[in-house]
Image (cartoon, rainbow, N blue to C red):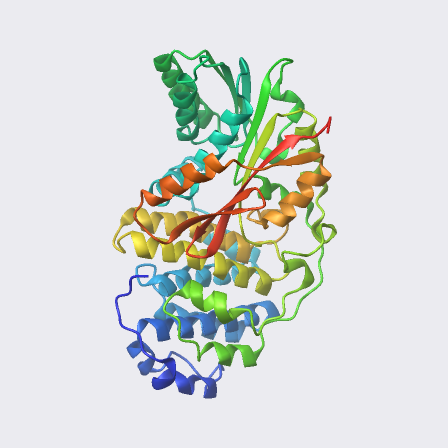
Amino acid sequence: MAQDEGSSSVTSSPLQFFSLVSLSPNLGSPYPWLRELKSEERGLYLIHLLLSCANHVASGSLENANIALEQISDLASPEGDTMQRIAAYFTEALADRILKAWPGLHKALNSTRISPVSERIIVRKLFFDLCPFLKVAYLITNQAIIEAIEGEKMVHIIDLNSAEPAQWIALLQVLSARPEGPPHLRITGIHEQKEVLEQTALRLTEEAEKLDIPFQFNPVVSKLEHLDVESLRVKTGEALAISSVLQLHSLLASDEQIRKKSPSVNSVHLQRVLHMNQSSVGELLDKDLTNGYTRSPDSASSSPLSGTASPKIESFLTALWGLSPKIMLVTEQESNHNGSTLMDRLLEALYFYASLFDCLESTVSRASMDRMKVEKMLFGEEIKNIIACEGSERKERHEKLDKWIQRLDLAGFGRMPLSYYALLQAKRLLQSYNCDGYKIKEENGYLVICWQDRALFSVSAWKCSRFD
């Protein structure tokens, strides 16, 4: 990771004395020596403050939380190094959570905020351009579909979030070169905004005409949680494929459950954090952050599905299974941001977003406006939703692959190993970025896209096993 400052042993700096300093109403602003800390030392201190602040927020100690927020804000920066940027957005999320205790104040401060769907689409496109994760997911999805529909003359693809035509333009180009000729292709695109579907339809129709492929686009204006699967008009004789890229987790918000509290980060662990000496935020979190923290049972990736049962997602997957697809591709974030407590989610989010921020730090200039937009409008908004929101308002309920395997198995889907050729293509795409940090792994037939050794996104393939 690129750094603007050198690093040195934490124990050789004034930071070694921090364990003697407690957050109290008399503490006030950070001591002047805090501003002299090197990048790594400052990062460790910011982690300490974030965890302390989150504990205060969770326990309702707002005076101490306010002190911590003031200290963090003095050291964090959305234009600084990786940890400064992360801290800036987690601080905003924690502050937003506090403000939600006063609904009138929170609404007044956000009354003029504009967050149109089109803006989210733009920033997702910037993420698509700056990082290869979505490109790889699209490539793997397309290759699996091509293999599944080999020889088929009528093909129907259901896209659960049809906002990015790039995926299907690439598929059209591959199908145009099929030895037996292209199939008749129909894509049903689902999105909550009609204008987005119209733009997607225009782009795809133009490309299909240019390639002389018989093509039809069927727009369905709907939020995913309100989608009537029966309205998707699947016809007899069509080879059906379903694509879900970073969509299914949002359905988990429909079935909020009351869960037990879990232990919070203890002071012994916080002091241990100060003596770590890792150059990467991701490495720091990976190697030590959870050693002193006991996760609640439902935050562990191996926890039983019954702990997070969701009738909405179960009925939705069962309905998709009822369409008898030849293949369904699911891409999801490989992290558990659906824990029952604030501390569960904060730690998991630190793991996940540290890798994404570190990825951009290593590959994109700090001064890049596109990078800042992605960090603020995409990562920052996701972090805020994970940390500040509860109930049906909390949409970013990412869960790991093992949970999705259980859900899809229960819905009747059978696992389809992704091909070696798909893995090979993905590796070639990542190699074209000339960055050693991007990696892809095969795990039991699924593919996992990583930054360094941290899994960030998973892609899995499924078939309707009605006749198995």
